[in-house]
Amino acid sequence: MDTQKTVLVLGATGGIGGEMVRQLLAAGWQVRALKRGEIQPARGDGIAWLRGDALSRTDVMAAAKGCAVIVHAVNPPGYRQWGQLVLPMLDNTIAAAIAEGATIVLPGTVYNFGPDAFPAPGQSLAEDAPQRPLTRKGAIRVELEARLERAATQGARVIIVRAGDFFGPRAGNNWFSQGLVKPGQPVRSVLSPGAPGIGHQWSYLPDVARTMLQLLALRATLPAFARFHMAGHWDHDGRQMTGAIVRVVEQATGARPALKYFPWWLVSLASPFVATMRELREMRYLWQTPLSMENARLLAVLGQEPHTPLDEAVRATLAGMGNLQTTGKKNAPGWPAH
Image (cartoon, rainbow, N blue to C red; front, top):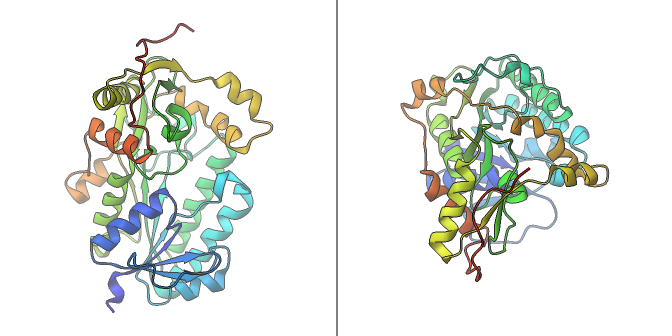
């Protein structure tokens, strides 16, 4: 076995983890993954499934034995016990990477930036912008990266790829599937969470995974601690993504969905009782202030950023979510008044 192309993926059943698994296998990597509970023999998916838990250091270190790369894409499901579980899971990955001299790949976000870091209109956010988040989740993200930076001085190597809000055919829980449309249903309406005219950054999950894979191929030439921003899909006025959904649905079904504003008032009412709603409300500031990321560092290394055209990406996403069904009655277009 070529240990230089052996990778452990933590979170292989999730959105970015699953996409990384698919692309790593296609690129000829030997892929291992941890799974809680019983392991079914001979699954036939090309993955070496190992019984274990990302919260167990013994399990993670055993699974990482001989691995050149660890993809850390694991998160507590449904945001439950986020503050208690996220950092211990990362510490186990770090311990395994130091022991193996492996490269850790972390999918990053913009959550670790507070509004004070947001650039002036027309400018983009660089990788070294100050990290002073206003939210609990953002503070955890800052600590994640700080621990990884320390690990890069102790024998591990680190690649962090920060991206906008994920969307894709198998992206799992995200703003696209939780806030814009309902999975598995005909799209009769599309919700817009952003304030009118406010830009928002999106990232198509297969593009993110492709970017990580290309950086992994160059990891020997990168600094021990390397952070990159993706430009992704910049929705400059908050209407490009919803407009693409409307176009794709109408082309596929003949029915034109209505455009509506996201019911933030309902999120506020439900947030004391529903963890997901609390998380949505906490990150609302990202829908009230435009934030785009500068990808010059990524372009300097890769030459170009993997980028699927928006309508093509939206079509694949809606198809994967089971949305492109005949909706029957056509809905009136337009934006409702406030």
